[in-house]
Length: 315
Image 1: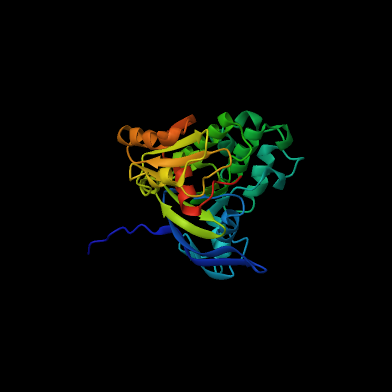
Image 2 (image 1 turned 90 degrees about the horizontal axis):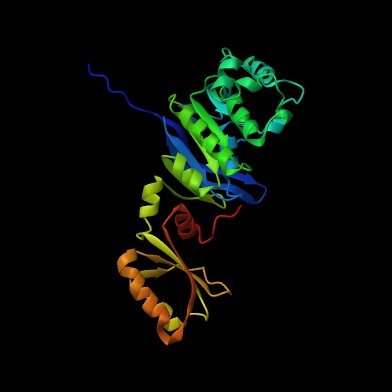
């Protein structure tokens, strides 16, 4: 008999709702995370990202809906799930009077088997800091240690909640390298972020959340392709554009709604930079309207988020 390997989803979220009083922090979302991928949940603060992760980790019970992690129901098999996943905690959750190696050794006692602290610290580039305490580390080192602590039980799935928040660009990219390194060891990673560039660089697929609702799930490239545009044009004019000028953009440019500002700044999208820019400038220049500033950039996830939610990403 022929045996066919079927790859199960690492996480399945089905019609998940989490209420806090009258507020739906998570409002009926459904998605799956495939084994072996880096899956990102992208959204501003208050979108429901952290609440979704806490339910996946077994820290919060869902109000309604179902969550399966590594083939197990999080409500009925929570302890078994926790034994096989790694969760990044904030640095404030650890004892200040213990060294890094001692913290990892203590965490290891919570599992039937644990990775030796020296091996984990070497993996995350903190072997030389093994005898130091958390308050002696830089911000980037602290973040690397919080990720290290999630690897104590050699997990199949690692959950990271905004792992680079508050870091400078260089430290942020060091964390990116560490996440890729962990992923290369056949570990599935679910991470939240509100950095567009981070999601686009790290994640195979992305779920975009806002106000507890799932707006889209797809690869970064497919999400960008949905817009049907190649370039974004930001234009600042000396006078407001007239309704006639706006109405005259005939397919070469798309006016992005909700981006009218008091300083006469307008955001438009072009399908083709070379063919669309000339007609666009001609239409703006009619009736003597002067362009004071113009920026042309390739369409990014920022534009996707704007299209799906009607707002820019909020910090």
